[in-house]
Image 1 (tube, rainbow, N blue to C red):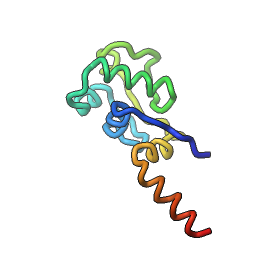
Image 2: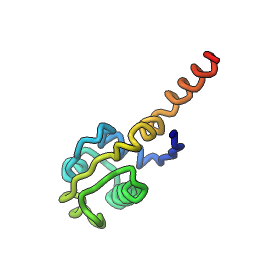
Image 3: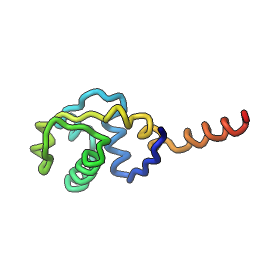
Image 4: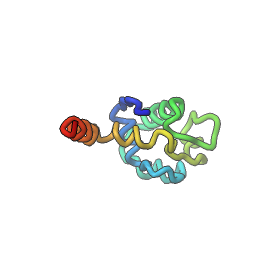
Length: 103
């Protein structure tokens, strides 16, 4: 089943930083990799992705940067393919056009 996922720029940056392989990323490492993103924006995007189920976390609540540092995150494997399509929408268009030509 294909889900249409629309992501904001911050969410895209966060997902690209984590990677879509489903491997665990420690919060401290994620903070180091994220670069110049504002802390409030980072927390907002991260909690939004967690609430949607796109990112899984070993902590129940993430409210501060200290919570993020002590947590472990990974991309939900059941959404990985749809998230990959959302990160690269041109690839999805190419697949659709190839399918139409074959018919």
